[in-house]
Image 1 (spheres, rainbow, N blue to C red):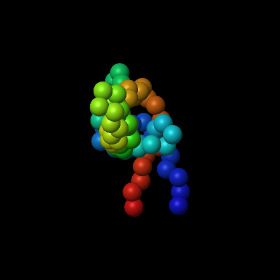
Image 2 (image 1 turned 90 degrees about the vertical axis):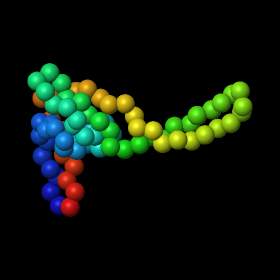
Image 3 (image 1 turned 180 degrees about the horizontal axis):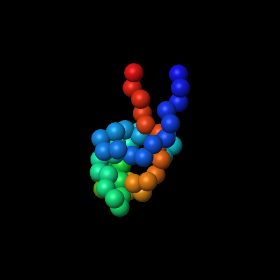
Image 4 (image 1 turned 135 degrees about the horizontal axis):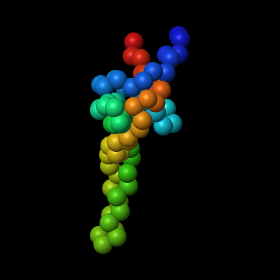
Length: 77
């Protein structure tokens, strides 16, 4: 299987970014590209008042990058 070539981000497509994690290009315009995460991250919530621990899966914040960045697209077959 061939590796896809890096390309400029296009709105609505999924790309690999930090540590090979998938992000969707939610907004692409002349000055920025907003990458929305497609995965969830595990978070620990600790209440010191009640001495309870909870684990939730939350979506990390979106990232802003240059619209001319070259990203590797995710190909699903």
